[in-house]
Image (cartoon, rainbow, N blue to C red; front, side):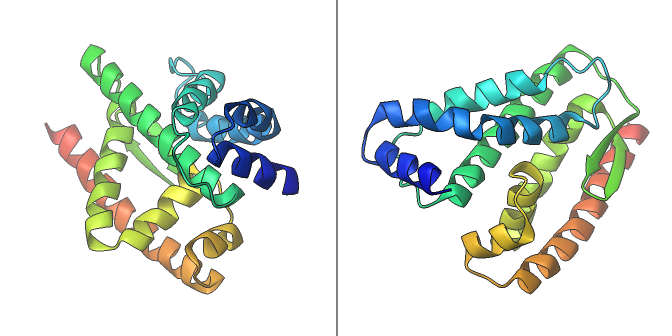
Length: 189
């Protein structure tokens, strides 16, 4: 942890080589997160975990102007980068073909819907949630895309763990209703 924080500080101060030293320390955890995102996809999904991590690496490398606060802050930015990559990939795939009936697992629940559209629908639902409650949207993003624990999220957002759990339950329920409605509309169309 101390080494990661030290490297983030060096990177924040403009030392580009610090990111090259930092990335191998975080690679395994980023790879695990990427694999968990993609585990609900069909076997023929064209984006693999390694590619997701490498694309996130390239995007993060271009983020040298970020005022890195901590390991949690890094994973929050990495989560947002992976989310954007998955949404961009889904949009590209959606223009190629539609493949209904694939499951997306959002932690403890699943929504049936088109593989290509689900990340786009999730992204749109998170944007709507952010307009209603920015903190709850952040909790979802940090937990689902960032793989952070309730304690890590609480520390990063400077709120209690109980508040994180409450926000997660409310946001999860809200997203479930939103995604279910989007999928039902998709199936009817």
